[in-house]
Image 1 (cartoon, rainbow, N blue to C red):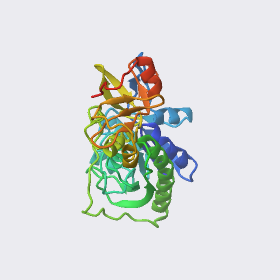
Image 2: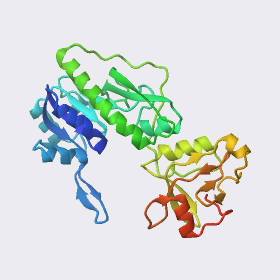
Image 3: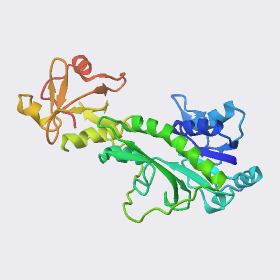
Image 4: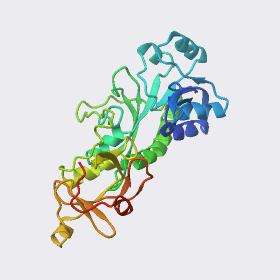
Amino acid sequence: MRLVFAGTPSVALPSLDAIAASGHELVAVVSRPDAPAGRGRQLVPSPVSAWAAERGIPVLTPAKPRDPEFLERLRALEPDCAPVVAYGALVPRVALDIPRFGWVNLHFSLLPAWRGAAPVQHAVLHGDEITGASVFLLEEGLDTGPVFGTLTEPVGPRDTSGELLERLSHTGAELLVRVLDGIASGEISAVPQPHEGITTAPKVTVEDAEVRWADPAFAVDRRIRACTPAPGAWTTFRGERLKLGPVTPLTAATVIGGSPTPEPGELVVERNRVLVGTGTVPAVLGQVTAPGKKAMPADAWARGARVESGERVS
């Protein structure tokens, strides 16, 4: 089939690689416009745009996918199908109707669970043990279209969102190509999503990433892992924002066995580790990034900042 691929961030690149290696013809890509990045705030193309430009594949970057000029160019390409991975903009009906077989979206959850912008982060945040990916026919509704195929992926107890998404981006790419093959051969059809089990996954904001030390240790752990690497979990120490990597909650047996039991947010500085109190058992801090500093182990940070037991994060 003639394909026009729509995507923006690096998580879409495994799918592009898989499509390029398939028997389908990639005639163009659609991506979000170049965006300012770095200290100089210079305009930089998206990872998908850069991938296509390096290979001489036409790149379309409409400000909005309903722009008449974009729609005209899309029609001229005569695509059979438009696979989508993390494009980042709502596609209007006038654009959805152009490809013969529609727009086919790879979404990183088992729909109808976690419809929305941040399915992997919400799976980690809510303690899901199993998640996956779905390929569905894009509609005007938010991730509501009928599903062509799914795969499952276990969520490890120490998985960050970044690690889980990396795995799903590769297995999901294989699923997407299988679905495209099935559409081309006529051997696959989409099945409506069930009405039960619908959950939503809105974007995780910087405010959401603030650690709430009064929560149980398991919830503190999940929040930090869900926000790693983006938007990045944080807390406040001595009036400044401190970025945090994943923590390790102590077991109840360890606490009973003699480990300190600090109040929520209270720090206990030991020789080779730093504990912080939560609403239940303490947690061992992992990587810490102070303002203007590189990430470092918490014990090294505590020595450099001369942190004393009894000080608090909040």
